[in-house]
Length: 118
Image (cartoon, rainbow, N blue to C red; front, top):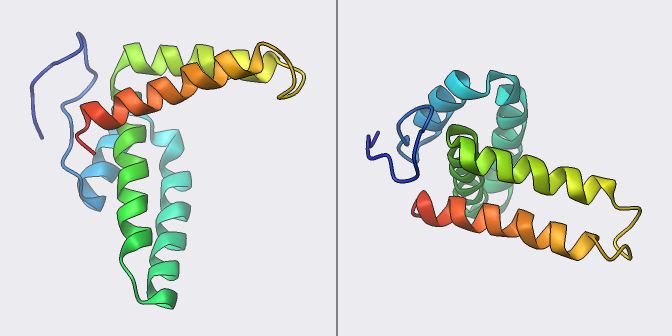
């Protein structure tokens, strides 16, 4: 794990991009999401075995490295919370507020991926 705080207060150091390190990190900062992580990991491993490719496993690691990055950084967590609330407050994707809210959500995810060096 790195201990370089790049964006102010961080709940934990950034974990390495391995299944075990990501699981340990998530257990510390968002244990309520462990079942979701495990279900997605099992699906990724099954798909990888079925198609004889590591792509689904790499995708799972990328997804959860991003999720851990958001969960460990209060600034990103709060921005995502506000963006999701705005998305859910819209009646449909035809609502004029929908697109800006989705853009905010995507910006948070992109920043998390960049920060986690994905």
